[in-house]
Length: 328
Figure (cartoon, helix red, strand yellow):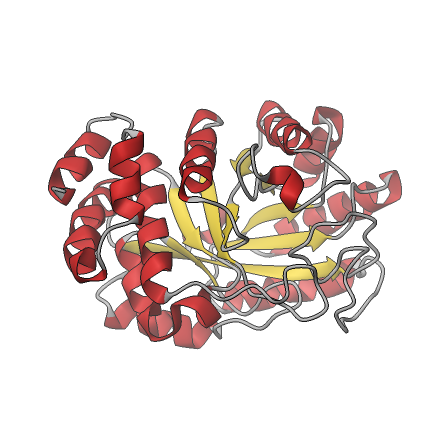
């Protein structure tokens, strides 16, 4: 397959066919350098050589009634994690200061659970106002299922972006969760967009899905016009239903990132949870497809320290895009 032809199609606004998408995911490993080089043309056309770093905080841990099979915070998880209610506004402000000092473009506050309570929404909005008054950083929330009205309350508090991942295709969704539906997630993403927030929505690869599931969800994200796409690679956690799944190979992860870039050419593609354990020494190559990175850790698992990420970005010839709170 001619990877530059696929890159030209993506740059021209065309949607790759199933055959072309499968060609990307099933490319021989020895073809990976050429695939990455072609994909990087698309990435650089839309995002230049800049890389945004995003820091998140697990603002409320555990205590979730949902049964998502990948998650250590779910009701069915037996993983030994910390469990605590929503952190104070001061703790969140301090964490935002630290994220800005680490050169993060965006700070994301994550609240575990099916959906936030009215009190939690008020607390989060108050915390966002305090952060925005002092720290020049973009603010994102990830708080479960939402209505447009609730999303507006968070926007009015000072949040710029809302995250809610589709995680996988509609076909495969009931294999990983039964307490809410794929359509519940789509409705939340639409509510975030309707509220005037920048929508962030992504996936988890490596849960047992088929190639077509990855293609379908990548296209669904294109149709939802999301601005930012976190691509998680399952980090199997003992004590969760998916805790015994094998890790993906680094080459598989890179092909998945190429697919998401070619199907969503102008969006910020961000290697997220599981990046470190699945990509290993090949992490730097992800920057040929991705324009954003999570740094510092995830909800219950550690991640690449910010200073180490900055060094990797600069050694690869890219530059950190701090944003200073201005752009989405």
